[in-house]
Image (cartoon, rainbow, N blue to C red; front, side, top):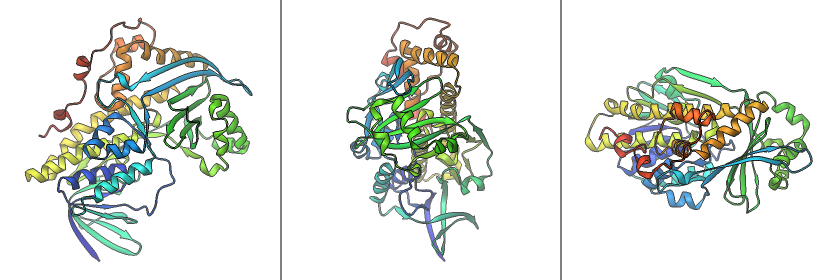
Length: 438
Protein backbone atom coordinates (compact mmCIF):
# COMPACT_ATOMS: atom_id res chain seq x y z
CA UNK A 1 0.00 0.00 0.00
CA UNK A 2 1.37 3.37 -1.09
CA UNK A 3 1.59 6.21 1.42
CA UNK A 4 1.98 9.92 0.58
CA UNK A 5 2.74 12.87 2.81
CA UNK A 6 1.70 16.44 2.06
CA UNK A 7 0.75 19.76 3.62
CA UNK A 8 -2.85 19.74 2.39
CA UNK A 9 -5.05 16.93 1.06
CA UNK A 10 -8.11 17.92 -1.00
CA UNK A 11 -10.89 15.43 -1.70
CA UNK A 12 -12.68 16.51 -4.88
CA UNK A 13 -11.49 18.06 -8.12
CA UNK A 14 -14.41 20.34 -8.93
CA UNK A 15 -13.94 24.07 -9.42
CA UNK A 16 -13.70 24.70 -5.66
CA UNK A 17 -11.08 22.04 -5.03
CA UNK A 18 -9.07 23.04 -8.10
CA UNK A 19 -9.17 26.76 -7.27
CA UNK A 20 -7.95 25.95 -3.76
CA UNK A 21 -5.19 23.69 -5.09
CA UNK A 22 -4.03 26.29 -7.63
CA UNK A 23 -3.80 29.01 -4.99
CA UNK A 24 -1.96 26.82 -2.49
CA UNK A 25 0.50 25.40 -5.03
CA UNK A 26 1.25 28.90 -6.32
CA UNK A 27 2.31 29.84 -2.79
CA UNK A 28 4.56 26.86 -2.20
CA UNK A 29 2.10 24.71 -0.23
CA UNK A 30 2.29 21.01 -1.12
CA UNK A 31 -1.12 19.67 -2.19
CA UNK A 32 -2.45 16.22 -3.04
CA UNK A 33 -5.86 16.25 -4.75
CA UNK A 34 -7.97 13.13 -5.34
CA UNK A 35 -10.71 13.30 -8.01
CA UNK A 36 -12.93 10.27 -8.51
CA UNK A 37 -14.15 11.12 -12.04
CA UNK A 38 -12.26 9.61 -14.97
CA UNK A 39 -13.66 11.96 -17.61
CA UNK A 40 -15.83 15.05 -18.04
CA UNK A 41 -19.10 14.91 -16.16
CA UNK A 42 -22.27 14.98 -18.30
CA UNK A 43 -24.23 16.40 -15.34
CA UNK A 44 -25.06 20.09 -15.50
CA UNK A 45 -23.04 22.26 -13.12
CA UNK A 46 -22.84 26.01 -12.67
CA UNK A 47 -21.69 28.15 -15.60
CA UNK A 48 -22.34 31.70 -14.39
CA UNK A 49 -19.25 33.37 -12.93
CA UNK A 50 -20.09 36.40 -10.80
CA UNK A 51 -17.83 39.51 -10.56
CA UNK A 52 -16.20 38.52 -7.22
CA UNK A 53 -15.24 35.20 -8.78
CA UNK A 54 -13.71 37.00 -11.76
CA UNK A 55 -11.59 39.02 -9.33
CA UNK A 56 -10.39 35.79 -7.69
CA UNK A 57 -9.61 34.21 -11.06
CA UNK A 58 -7.54 37.26 -11.97
CA UNK A 59 -5.45 36.79 -8.82
CA UNK A 60 -4.95 33.15 -9.84
CA UNK A 61 -3.67 34.36 -13.22
CA UNK A 62 -6.36 32.67 -15.32
CA UNK A 63 -8.94 35.40 -15.95
CA UNK A 64 -7.78 36.22 -19.49
CA UNK A 65 -8.13 32.56 -20.51
CA UNK A 66 -11.51 32.25 -18.79
CA UNK A 67 -12.76 35.44 -20.46
CA UNK A 68 -11.59 34.14 -23.85
CA UNK A 69 -13.76 31.06 -23.36
CA UNK A 70 -16.82 32.83 -21.99
CA UNK A 71 -19.77 35.02 -22.95
CA UNK A 72 -20.11 38.36 -21.17
CA UNK A 73 -23.36 39.11 -19.34
CA UNK A 74 -23.55 42.79 -18.42
CA UNK A 75 -27.31 42.82 -17.87
CA UNK A 76 -30.07 40.55 -16.64
CA UNK A 77 -33.45 41.07 -18.33
CA UNK A 78 -36.74 40.16 -16.67
CA UNK A 79 -39.61 39.95 -19.15
CA UNK A 80 -43.23 39.32 -18.19
CA UNK A 81 -45.40 38.13 -21.08
CA UNK A 82 -48.85 36.82 -21.89
CA UNK A 83 -48.43 33.46 -23.59
CA UNK A 84 -50.51 33.12 -26.76
CA UNK A 85 -50.77 29.48 -27.95
CA UNK A 86 -49.63 29.26 -31.55
CA UNK A 87 -48.64 32.95 -31.66
CA UNK A 88 -45.78 35.16 -30.39
CA UNK A 89 -46.10 36.25 -26.75
CA UNK A 90 -47.38 39.68 -25.76
CA UNK A 91 -44.87 41.60 -23.63
CA UNK A 92 -46.36 42.99 -20.43
CA UNK A 93 -43.24 44.38 -18.76
CA UNK A 94 -39.47 44.42 -19.31
CA UNK A 95 -36.94 45.29 -16.61
CA UNK A 96 -33.17 45.37 -17.13
CA UNK A 97 -30.77 45.12 -14.19
CA UNK A 98 -27.20 46.18 -14.88
CA UNK A 99 -23.96 44.87 -13.36
CA UNK A 100 -22.46 48.21 -14.36
CA UNK A 101 -24.25 49.86 -11.42
CA UNK A 102 -21.69 48.25 -9.10
CA UNK A 103 -18.67 50.50 -8.50
CA UNK A 104 -16.03 48.00 -9.59
CA UNK A 105 -13.79 47.22 -12.56
CA UNK A 106 -15.50 43.82 -12.50
CA UNK A 107 -18.69 45.16 -14.06
CA UNK A 108 -20.11 42.01 -15.65
CA UNK A 109 -20.73 38.33 -15.11
CA UNK A 110 -19.49 35.61 -17.46
CA UNK A 111 -21.07 32.43 -18.83
CA UNK A 112 -18.42 29.72 -19.28
CA UNK A 113 -18.97 25.98 -19.91
CA UNK A 114 -18.36 24.32 -16.55
CA UNK A 115 -15.85 21.77 -17.77
CA UNK A 116 -13.84 24.54 -19.48
CA UNK A 117 -13.51 26.39 -16.16
CA UNK A 118 -12.36 23.17 -14.51
CA UNK A 119 -9.87 22.49 -17.30
CA UNK A 120 -8.33 25.96 -16.96
CA UNK A 121 -8.03 25.69 -13.16
CA UNK A 122 -6.61 22.17 -13.36
CA UNK A 123 -4.02 23.30 -15.91
CA UNK A 124 -3.01 26.21 -13.67
CA UNK A 125 -2.59 23.92 -10.66
CA UNK A 126 -0.52 21.46 -12.71
CA UNK A 127 1.80 24.29 -13.77
CA UNK A 128 3.12 24.21 -10.20
CA UNK A 129 4.22 20.61 -10.62
CA UNK A 130 6.57 20.55 -7.66
CA UNK A 131 3.74 21.39 -5.28
CA UNK A 132 0.67 19.81 -6.89
CA UNK A 133 0.06 16.07 -7.03
CA UNK A 134 -3.12 15.09 -8.91
CA UNK A 135 -4.78 11.70 -8.45
CA UNK A 136 -7.43 11.20 -11.19
CA UNK A 137 -9.98 8.38 -11.08
CA UNK A 138 -9.26 8.10 -7.36
CA UNK A 139 -12.04 7.82 -4.83
CA UNK A 140 -11.72 9.22 -1.32
CA UNK A 141 -13.07 6.61 1.09
CA UNK A 142 -12.77 8.50 4.38
CA UNK A 143 -10.24 8.45 7.18
CA UNK A 144 -8.31 5.61 8.76
CA UNK A 145 -5.75 6.02 11.54
CA UNK A 146 -5.74 9.77 11.04
CA UNK A 147 -4.97 9.51 7.32
CA UNK A 148 -7.04 9.93 4.16
CA UNK A 149 -7.82 6.60 2.52
CA UNK A 150 -8.15 6.60 -1.27
CA UNK A 151 -8.78 3.95 -3.91
CA UNK A 152 -7.71 3.80 -7.55
CA UNK A 153 -9.09 0.73 -9.29
CA UNK A 154 -8.18 -1.96 -6.72
CA UNK A 155 -5.22 -0.13 -5.19
CA UNK A 156 -5.57 1.45 -1.76
CA UNK A 157 -3.36 4.38 -0.73
CA UNK A 158 -3.09 6.58 2.34
CA UNK A 159 -2.28 10.27 2.49
CA UNK A 160 -0.89 11.90 5.60
CA UNK A 161 -1.56 15.65 5.66
CA UNK A 162 -1.49 18.57 8.05
CA UNK A 163 -4.94 19.66 6.83
CA UNK A 164 -7.71 17.71 5.07
CA UNK A 165 -10.20 19.59 2.91
CA UNK A 166 -13.52 18.19 1.75
CA UNK A 167 -14.52 19.54 -1.66
CA UNK A 168 -16.44 16.42 -2.66
CA UNK A 169 -19.81 18.07 -3.24
CA UNK A 170 -23.15 17.15 -1.74
CA UNK A 171 -22.03 13.67 -0.71
CA UNK A 172 -19.03 14.39 1.51
CA UNK A 173 -17.11 11.82 3.59
CA UNK A 174 -15.18 14.72 5.11
CA UNK A 175 -18.41 16.33 6.29
CA UNK A 176 -19.54 12.97 7.69
CA UNK A 177 -16.27 12.65 9.62
CA UNK A 178 -16.83 16.13 11.11
CA UNK A 179 -20.28 15.06 12.37
CA UNK A 180 -21.89 18.39 11.52
CA UNK A 181 -25.60 19.21 11.41
CA UNK A 182 -27.20 19.78 8.00
CA UNK A 183 -30.41 21.82 7.74
CA UNK A 184 -32.16 21.09 4.43
CA UNK A 185 -34.97 23.02 2.71
CA UNK A 186 -36.96 21.71 -0.30
CA UNK A 187 -39.07 23.59 -2.87
CA UNK A 188 -42.37 23.13 -4.69
CA UNK A 189 -40.74 23.24 -8.14
CA UNK A 190 -38.10 21.52 -10.25
CA UNK A 191 -36.19 22.66 -13.35
CA UNK A 192 -35.47 21.18 -16.75
CA UNK A 193 -32.15 22.34 -18.16
CA UNK A 194 -30.61 21.84 -21.59
CA UNK A 195 -28.19 23.70 -23.87
CA UNK A 196 -29.47 24.52 -27.37
CA UNK A 197 -28.27 26.63 -30.33
CA UNK A 198 -29.07 30.35 -30.29
CA UNK A 199 -29.06 33.07 -32.95
CA UNK A 200 -25.93 35.28 -32.92
CA UNK A 201 -28.11 38.26 -32.00
CA UNK A 202 -29.41 36.60 -28.83
CA UNK A 203 -26.72 37.86 -26.43
CA UNK A 204 -28.39 38.98 -23.18
CA UNK A 205 -29.29 36.98 -20.10
CA UNK A 206 -33.06 36.80 -19.84
CA UNK A 207 -35.79 35.46 -17.57
CA UNK A 208 -39.22 35.15 -19.21
CA UNK A 209 -42.26 34.61 -17.03
CA UNK A 210 -46.03 34.32 -17.16
CA UNK A 211 -48.31 33.64 -14.20
CA UNK A 212 -47.52 29.93 -14.58
CA UNK A 213 -44.27 29.64 -16.61
CA UNK A 214 -40.61 30.48 -16.09
CA UNK A 215 -37.86 30.20 -18.70
CA UNK A 216 -34.32 31.34 -17.90
CA UNK A 217 -31.98 31.91 -20.87
CA UNK A 218 -28.24 32.42 -20.40
CA UNK A 219 -26.07 32.72 -23.54
CA UNK A 220 -22.90 30.67 -23.80
CA UNK A 221 -20.07 31.07 -26.32
CA UNK A 222 -20.22 29.25 -29.68
CA UNK A 223 -23.79 30.46 -30.29
CA UNK A 224 -25.34 28.28 -27.59
CA UNK A 225 -27.68 29.15 -24.75
CA UNK A 226 -28.26 27.42 -21.42
CA UNK A 227 -32.00 27.13 -20.82
CA UNK A 228 -33.72 26.57 -17.48
CA UNK A 229 -37.45 25.75 -17.54
CA UNK A 230 -39.42 25.67 -14.30
CA UNK A 231 -41.97 22.88 -13.71
CA UNK A 232 -44.01 21.74 -10.73
CA UNK A 233 -42.32 19.23 -8.46
CA UNK A 234 -43.09 15.69 -9.63
CA UNK A 235 -44.36 16.81 -13.06
CA UNK A 236 -41.40 15.65 -15.17
CA UNK A 237 -42.78 12.21 -16.03
CA UNK A 238 -46.10 13.70 -17.19
CA UNK A 239 -44.24 16.23 -19.39
CA UNK A 240 -42.18 13.42 -20.92
CA UNK A 241 -45.38 11.55 -21.73
CA UNK A 242 -46.60 14.59 -23.70
CA UNK A 243 -43.51 14.29 -25.91
CA UNK A 244 -40.78 16.66 -27.05
CA UNK A 245 -43.27 18.58 -29.20
CA UNK A 246 -44.80 19.89 -25.96
CA UNK A 247 -41.39 21.25 -24.92
CA UNK A 248 -40.78 22.75 -28.37
CA UNK A 249 -44.10 24.56 -28.19
CA UNK A 250 -43.52 25.89 -24.67
CA UNK A 251 -40.11 27.34 -25.57
CA UNK A 252 -41.34 28.78 -28.88
CA UNK A 253 -44.34 30.50 -27.30
CA UNK A 254 -42.16 32.09 -24.61
CA UNK A 255 -39.21 33.05 -26.84
CA UNK A 256 -39.85 32.79 -30.60
CA UNK A 257 -36.16 33.46 -31.36
CA UNK A 258 -35.38 29.98 -30.02
CA UNK A 259 -38.15 28.14 -31.87
CA UNK A 260 -35.63 26.63 -34.28
CA UNK A 261 -32.87 25.99 -31.74
CA UNK A 262 -35.15 24.09 -29.36
CA UNK A 263 -35.81 21.51 -32.06
CA UNK A 264 -32.17 20.43 -31.79
CA UNK A 265 -33.35 18.46 -28.73
CA UNK A 266 -33.85 14.99 -30.18
CA UNK A 267 -33.95 12.91 -27.03
CA UNK A 268 -35.08 13.42 -23.43
CA UNK A 269 -31.68 12.08 -22.35
CA UNK A 270 -30.15 15.45 -23.19
CA UNK A 271 -32.63 17.23 -20.89
CA UNK A 272 -31.61 17.13 -17.24
CA UNK A 273 -33.95 17.32 -14.29
CA UNK A 274 -32.72 19.67 -11.54
CA UNK A 275 -34.27 19.25 -8.09
CA UNK A 276 -33.45 22.39 -6.11
CA UNK A 277 -32.93 22.29 -2.38
CA UNK A 278 -30.74 24.14 0.05
CA UNK A 279 -28.78 23.22 3.14
CA UNK A 280 -26.16 24.81 5.34
CA UNK A 281 -23.95 23.06 7.87
CA UNK A 282 -23.54 24.41 11.38
CA UNK A 283 -19.72 24.57 11.13
CA UNK A 284 -17.10 24.58 8.39
CA UNK A 285 -14.15 23.03 10.24
CA UNK A 286 -13.29 20.61 13.02
CA UNK A 287 -9.73 20.06 14.18
CA UNK A 288 -7.66 19.85 11.01
CA UNK A 289 -10.65 19.11 8.75
CA UNK A 290 -12.54 21.73 6.72
CA UNK A 291 -15.19 21.68 3.99
CA UNK A 292 -15.89 24.01 1.07
CA UNK A 293 -18.54 24.44 -1.62
CA UNK A 294 -21.44 22.01 -1.80
CA UNK A 295 -19.98 19.95 1.04
CA UNK A 296 -20.80 22.90 3.33
CA UNK A 297 -23.75 24.57 1.62
CA UNK A 298 -26.08 24.21 -1.33
CA UNK A 299 -27.94 27.23 -2.64
CA UNK A 300 -31.08 27.51 -4.75
CA UNK A 301 -29.92 28.08 -8.36
CA UNK A 302 -32.16 31.11 -8.94
CA UNK A 303 -29.43 33.67 -8.18
CA UNK A 304 -26.62 31.69 -9.85
CA UNK A 305 -24.39 31.54 -6.78
CA UNK A 306 -23.51 27.89 -6.13
CA UNK A 307 -20.24 27.53 -8.05
CA UNK A 308 -19.24 31.07 -7.08
CA UNK A 309 -19.59 30.32 -3.38
CA UNK A 310 -17.26 27.32 -3.80
CA UNK A 311 -14.56 29.41 -5.50
CA UNK A 312 -14.97 32.18 -2.93
CA UNK A 313 -14.61 29.60 -0.13
CA UNK A 314 -11.44 28.36 -1.81
CA UNK A 315 -10.03 31.87 -2.05
CA UNK A 316 -10.39 32.65 1.66
CA UNK A 317 -9.30 29.20 2.84
CA UNK A 318 -6.40 29.09 0.38
CA UNK A 319 -5.14 32.51 1.47
CA UNK A 320 -5.37 31.43 5.12
CA UNK A 321 -3.53 28.13 4.67
CA UNK A 322 -0.83 29.75 2.52
CA UNK A 323 -0.31 32.43 5.18
CA UNK A 324 -0.01 29.74 7.88
CA UNK A 325 2.64 27.98 5.80
CA UNK A 326 4.58 31.18 5.14
CA UNK A 327 4.39 32.38 8.76
CA UNK A 328 5.00 28.90 10.22
CA UNK A 329 1.68 28.97 12.11
CA UNK A 330 -0.26 25.81 13.05
CA UNK A 331 -3.06 25.36 10.49
CA UNK A 332 -5.69 24.00 12.86
CA UNK A 333 -5.43 26.96 15.27
CA UNK A 334 -6.35 29.41 12.52
CA UNK A 335 -9.10 27.56 10.63
CA UNK A 336 -11.75 29.45 12.59
CA UNK A 337 -10.95 32.53 10.47
CA UNK A 338 -12.20 30.70 7.39
CA UNK A 339 -15.57 30.07 9.02
CA UNK A 340 -15.68 33.57 10.55
CA UNK A 341 -15.41 35.12 7.07
CA UNK A 342 -17.35 32.74 4.89
CA UNK A 343 -20.27 31.47 6.97
CA UNK A 344 -22.13 34.79 7.39
CA UNK A 345 -21.58 35.69 3.73
CA UNK A 346 -22.94 32.33 2.59
CA UNK A 347 -25.90 32.65 4.97
CA UNK A 348 -26.69 36.06 3.47
CA UNK A 349 -26.63 34.73 -0.10
CA UNK A 350 -28.62 31.64 0.84
CA UNK A 351 -31.36 33.96 2.10
CA UNK A 352 -31.13 36.16 -1.00
CA UNK A 353 -31.42 33.14 -3.31
CA UNK A 354 -34.29 31.72 -1.26
CA UNK A 355 -36.23 34.98 -1.54
CA UNK A 356 -35.55 35.05 -5.29
CA UNK A 357 -36.91 31.51 -5.53
CA UNK A 358 -40.09 32.43 -3.65
CA UNK A 359 -40.75 35.23 -6.14
CA UNK A 360 -41.25 32.58 -8.85
CA UNK A 361 -42.73 29.77 -6.72
CA UNK A 362 -46.43 30.69 -6.82
CA UNK A 363 -48.60 30.48 -9.92
CA UNK A 364 -51.25 33.09 -9.22
CA UNK A 365 -52.05 36.17 -11.29
CA UNK A 366 -52.14 38.40 -8.17
CA UNK A 367 -48.71 37.12 -7.17
CA UNK A 368 -47.45 37.82 -10.67
CA UNK A 369 -48.66 41.41 -10.45
CA UNK A 370 -46.85 41.80 -7.14
CA UNK A 371 -43.67 40.26 -8.59
CA UNK A 372 -43.79 42.48 -11.65
CA UNK A 373 -44.08 45.64 -9.55
CA UNK A 374 -41.34 44.48 -7.17
CA UNK A 375 -38.87 43.76 -9.97
CA UNK A 376 -39.69 47.07 -11.67
CA UNK A 377 -39.09 48.94 -8.42
CA UNK A 378 -35.55 47.48 -8.25
CA UNK A 379 -34.87 49.27 -11.51
CA UNK A 380 -36.75 52.48 -10.61
CA UNK A 381 -35.00 52.96 -7.26
CA UNK A 382 -31.21 53.18 -7.62
CA UNK A 383 -30.58 52.07 -4.04
CA UNK A 384 -32.51 48.85 -4.68
CA UNK A 385 -30.76 48.41 -8.03
CA UNK A 386 -27.27 48.87 -6.60
CA UNK A 387 -27.91 46.71 -3.53
CA UNK A 388 -29.35 43.85 -5.60
CA UNK A 389 -26.48 43.79 -8.09
CA UNK A 390 -23.76 44.38 -5.49
CA UNK A 391 -25.06 41.54 -3.33
CA UNK A 392 -25.35 38.96 -6.11
CA UNK A 393 -21.96 40.05 -7.51
CA UNK A 394 -20.26 38.80 -4.34
CA UNK A 395 -18.12 41.94 -4.26
CA UNK A 396 -19.78 43.23 -1.10
CA UNK A 397 -22.76 43.12 1.20
CA UNK A 398 -25.37 45.84 1.65
CA UNK A 399 -28.44 44.83 3.63
CA UNK A 400 -31.93 45.78 2.54
CA UNK A 401 -33.77 47.98 5.04
CA UNK A 402 -37.46 48.22 5.95
CA UNK A 403 -37.63 51.36 3.82
CA UNK A 404 -36.16 49.43 0.88
CA UNK A 405 -38.78 46.72 1.22
CA UNK A 406 -41.57 49.28 1.57
CA UNK A 407 -40.45 50.93 -1.67
CA UNK A 408 -40.19 47.55 -3.40
CA UNK A 409 -43.69 46.68 -2.18
CA UNK A 410 -45.06 49.99 -3.57
CA UNK A 411 -45.91 51.30 -0.11
CA UNK A 412 -43.45 54.17 -0.59
CA UNK A 413 -42.40 55.96 -3.80
CA UNK A 414 -38.99 55.25 -5.35
CA UNK A 415 -36.11 57.51 -4.35
CA UNK A 416 -34.82 59.88 -7.01
CA UNK A 417 -31.26 60.04 -5.68
CA UNK A 418 -28.48 58.04 -7.37
CA UNK A 419 -26.03 56.03 -5.26
CA UNK A 420 -22.50 57.43 -5.54
CA UNK A 421 -19.44 55.22 -6.04
CA UNK A 422 -18.05 56.63 -2.80
CA UNK A 423 -21.15 55.44 -0.93
CA UNK A 424 -20.85 51.96 -2.48
CA UNK A 425 -17.20 51.63 -1.47
CA UNK A 426 -18.34 51.48 2.18
CA UNK A 427 -20.04 48.15 1.40
CA UNK A 428 -17.50 46.49 -0.89
CA UNK A 429 -15.42 43.85 0.86
CA UNK A 430 -11.92 45.08 1.67
CA UNK A 431 -8.84 42.86 1.76
CA UNK A 432 -8.88 43.22 5.56
CA UNK A 433 -12.45 41.85 5.62
CA UNK A 434 -11.58 38.99 3.24
CA UNK A 435 -8.38 38.04 5.12
CA UNK A 436 -8.72 39.38 8.68
CA UNK A 437 -5.97 37.18 10.22
CA UNK A 438 -3.33 39.30 8.49
